[in-house]
Length: 324
Image (cartoon, rainbow, N blue to C red; front, side, top):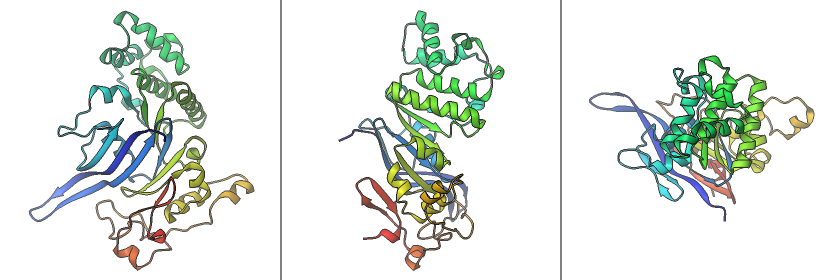
């Protein structure tokens, strides 16, 4: 059996928006999410803006504090009273953010940026730091003299390569990629994706890849999970996910992917048209949160919240249509 490197169980992360004498209102950004990632996997976490996918990443990293649930990394529950992460976790788990411009210190050069994790985690002796930085820059196909450049003097793609290099400095096992290419030009996106796949193979890494791009996940992920309004809709191995999508929301997303050939069109599920608007995350509908947009909804969808059903070995769907 493949070892699980990450297990998320019933994770809930809420944000207080206002409080009166009678009632407190929360955005339930992540509301009872469970999933697991095996060592060596590339798990794609997909959803529209506001679905809660980035909140999951920031909660794992300790930037947000959950109100409930467990996050188990390498067999250890990393959530504690102070929401602090151990040095072992900080070394083994890294994150690459969507906007490299805001995640790199503009007042430091690349050498200073990459030196910090090397010093904190004592990866190499201080006298070997520049040599190690040159080695890591080579891994992301940047020249050694790049270490003397400032983030303000380089392009967006190069900034993201520096962000990836910074993540690699601690020799991590697991990297969260929070839409790492969405702010870049298409030509640069391809270079970054190829770089990430190469590093995944060579460094034996595990990725949680957060994106809104389902066509991208088809080519790089081993497993895909779909989120909607803070909840998981469907989780499946990539091949099953694209061949036999089950949740109406998943079918709607896949049927709307643009294609350029009749062969690709034939692979898409039958067109599923959604109705209505995406509900406010502050006022999520009773029952299934997708029922206001679902053409297949019934009375039970409007009154009772569905649970996750296992439909095959690794395929799970949260929908009343598959209730046993």
